[in-house]
Image (cartoon, rainbow, N blue to C red; front, side):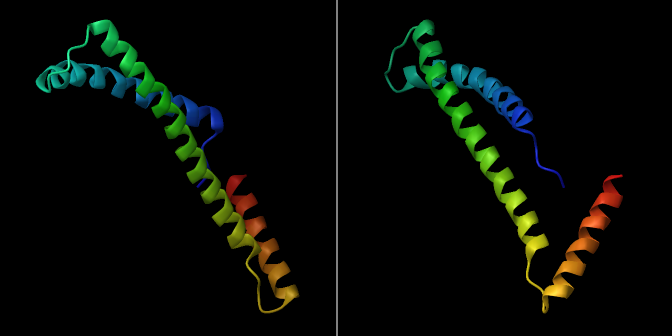
Length: 104
């Protein structure tokens, strides 16, 4: 399993967050008056933008963090010590060759 590129992570995060943003605006227009808070449509948009930007930053950071952990665990699997140095080197070479053949 390959990790997602940084650019694709950002595009996915922005797309998902933008969709949620418009649902959030609709919810704000219903919920705020229910609790007695009165905001204009323009104020609701600005409030939503604050949450939009923070959501993109957090979502992108979480996505990149998970990708980092995935790459790290794949690397750890390759570098796992074997019973002898020779056995580990041979096993590593075999796994790398297998992965190269699979990609090719």
